[in-house]
Image (cartoon, rainbow, N blue to C red):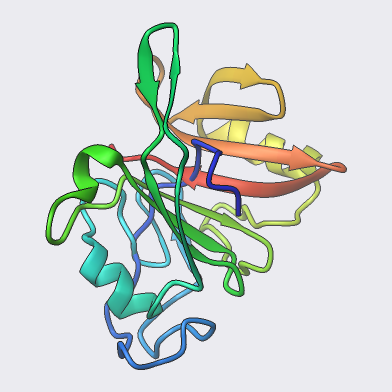
Length: 178
């Protein structure tokens, strides 16, 4: 997972995880299911709090704060990524929320080895042609960026789903808060 990336699927994590369970293993209530624009494994961006992520996944394998920098007079960085690399999950807490005792997470991102599948058939590692067919059939393309695409649930809606393709495969999905 890359802390410098600013993109993923909006997710919901099951809350049945025991905090003492090692981070590399999802808790008994955790799920690998995800539903675009709603949740990934039970975590809902903009709704789920850090404590629920910790309950679901345990202690992060890595916690990284992005480097602060200025660009065109605007300050960027200072966001916190909770990374669960062995599960293929990363969770973002923005700098605006990171000072809170139990901040709401901003977004969630999945990549290999995450094994979840959406109800419409999206999964990490699937051929890009099939993934793009599903995405364009069920969602609305907002922007086609260098290396990634943003989708909205409704025409003219907020693009809160981002996907990446590499080597003709769907490699990463990020959900943003709704």
